[in-house]
Length: 127
Image (cartoon, rainbow, N blue to C red; front, side, top):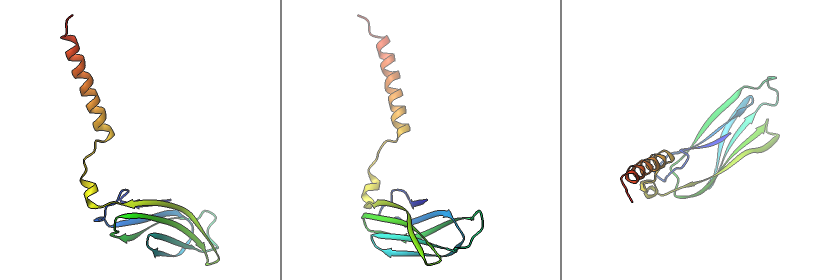
């Protein structure tokens, strides 16, 4: 699995690329080809019947606003290399964080309040 932390970063955030999987880890490295970041997990070819899990986080630092790509690549003893997963993400400018929005819960509460108010006023209307 590959994950960007925080999920919607802004330019003042320290961005982290987190990868998880399973295998006998020999080494790890972050390959920084900004705007493409590759978390390479180097596994031993001989491992247990049920390989242990791994969970690594790589700090990408503060990134400028723009579009980026993160890869999770697995290499087995330097011979076989393949990208397991990729994700695209955008870093927004700090001003984007200050735009207020309503979440799903807030919208539901607002709709219920509107329905209750409409119901109350509809009972007071006589024709």
